[in-house]
Length: 395
Image 1 (tube, rainbow, N blue to C red):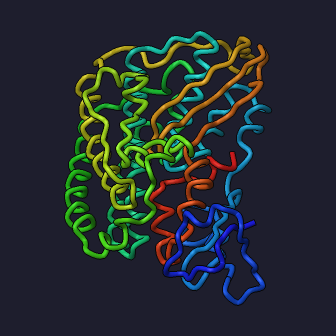
Image 2 (image 1 turned 135 degrees about the vertical axis):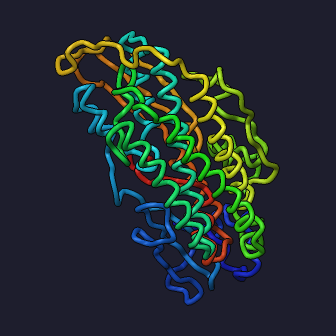
């Protein structure tokens, strides 16, 4: 049931009063209207839907509905051989599939005792930062578009395509790369690849400067985004909030720094934080992290060993049995902590796979809380500001 204080008017709704449970929405009352936003709607983050209860044009209740796209990955993975899951895990997060590739591969490697060559670690880190930058570009366009600035969305999607061109050259795939596999990566960089990456980075840098000028200094964006969807510091841990949503509130947590993996301990960067986690500052933190990714990619290309193996030989993968055991590994994706729990029972199939995606907490519990008291016209902007991908929820 939706909880709401039916005695208050839309313009003075206090979300703090809505958690008592003393009042419940009577949909037969003329005061309340149910409205669905999504699942096919430009104002939702992917194929998900919001069931909104409105008091005038103010949201009095919100429920998240997912499952309109990919779903049930964890059980599917338990019914496939270890190697057969690599084309599958990518679909859990379409805009940045590489984190699923890395975490699943790393979990299998830990269980099976597989060593990864040094150059392969650098190539993995390169792909993760490229995926981070591409995902942020897609997100930035969505955030601008949610407030009526569609031109920025066209710019960012174009520049994301430049990065997808690089992924296609590296892996043969634009969206689903299946580049990171147990033991390393599928192939080395082609000749001249580093130079072509640098050309794209220069284009992205120019775009980021324009976004700073046109979006963050835009009076309409400031007026609508500042103060929208404020996440209090005291609920960060209660709701399991991670990534830029937490860092914008001043919580300096980044797994790349707190628990370094791959070669992040050999790269120079600091954790980007803000002071108030509202829609405006969350966008600002992500903009800074985009600039940071540009610098990290340059560091990787500069420090990467010039030669070396990129893959360790594996047994026959169709008859591969991973020793019994279990592990949990995590990484810092664009939205926060991404984790994989994998258990093996000594057979050719995973015994259990559980994926921890940030969208589960951000798109369900957090969004439903922040939506109450928000004007209907700002719901799209609020949703995008939390940066969620539905398949991570219905996994």
